Image (cartoon, rainbow, N blue to C red; front, top):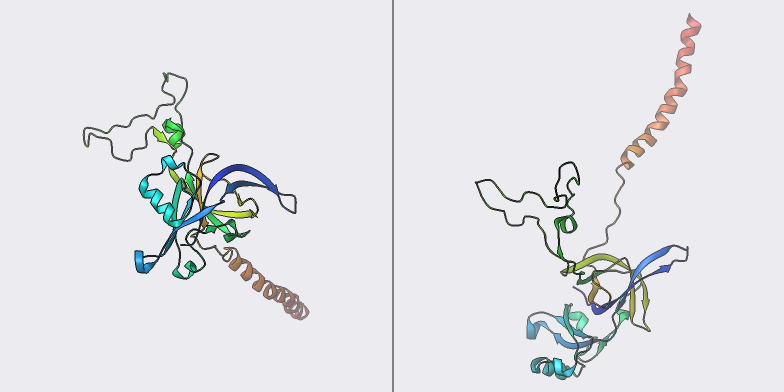
Length: 253
């Protein structure tokens, strides 16, 4: 894994490219990521960097956390997150220092994690995209019902995992493969193409994508096109020889 940043979702807007195309982007504030601890393989069994983001009142910080922040000489934050990094990357990072948005560059692909918007208790149509029943012709107040969920006498129960009504949203989600459109180092902002989970003001985590970039492979139609291109000269030569072969036959007749 690589080093990432913790921040908050500011909102969505759009930017225009040099060609005049409009790109929907999400603005992420990732300012003031303070290093609270550096873990190494010799002391902790693995290498990682722990950072904090945001602010928290002193009355809301327990003694254990207060001592942890005081040891690193940083202000207490409301988010504490650690990123696993290679041992070789720890040399330029110091406890009490800050990690800025300059670790990212325009054009890089990132994964953004956050808590999705909570929708409360939702029915099967909204939660699982079921189709509604008929709204007329004898259907009495059951056009938005899930339908039968029970079983016959054997097994006589509802199997676990049955898609039914229930709580929707408010879960941890990660959107992968978002492109960085702009990096604002002065205001510590990241503009990524597309949407990210969560409401405005919610905490998010940004890190480089874990998926390798896909290289475009050969087109399925490429072999057929190549075979057609190779057979075209042969067909042209055969067509040119055909009248010459027919001429002696006509003369002999």
